[in-house]
Image: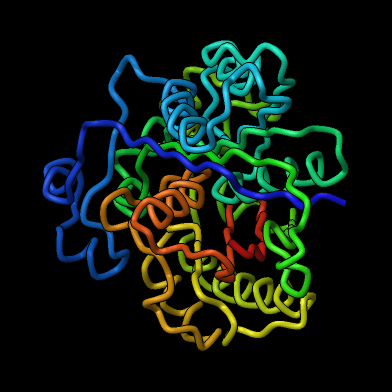
Length: 333
């Protein structure tokens, strides 16, 4: 059976920079408070005429260029997002049209900040089983459109961005027989009983958007930060250990960690518990903040373009988002 390889990566961040100093003028916060508690210094904010699909297309074009794949050769497009351009159709359908990838079937995956990893896992199954040869995976979100700008506990965290991966089916070469390369496995988990920890209460069928709901900011993101932090650390550690264990590996064999960039304290706590040197974890949240579904593929693209990833390197991926939804993956580059 052919194994799924990541053959191209791409990312895109809007031009507008929103600094901690800018936020000091919006809410009762400070640069020092934000840096100490999150590690974030600035984030990007989409222009008024930019939608999620626009960011996704830009990242996709970069990934397709690296892979040497034309849009018309794609068989599948999966977009992880919770901020699609509109409730329907899917963001993926709009991306397909803008790219001109007419042969590809396309759909969205909703797992909030774990959306990039979930989309990767779904596409991997299609490639691994031979149903598609070339797949485009995108994580893209504009959470600056979904935050309450009067809530300093959440509005300082999020930024806009998109990341993309092109997947291809490649048979294992003879020289890799003892150490097969590509996506070795993905591992996803969900606990819906924790849905209230991180959610947008209004805007769905349970609580449609009304003038009263808008006045109460119920269409904006709500988060129990303390509980999310505690759960995230435990879940990411356990998930990563389990996924490595499937392949008889331990954390000493990990060369790189590509993780959802939610909060520097979370990442430091996870790395400490896994006993992986923090230098192995690619960090960019100081520049972009939490870009939700985009975070993981953006981080992978930056690490790749910086020349950090070498043939045969073991990469541990991890992400967690609303749901609560979380997971991990093991990739040999």
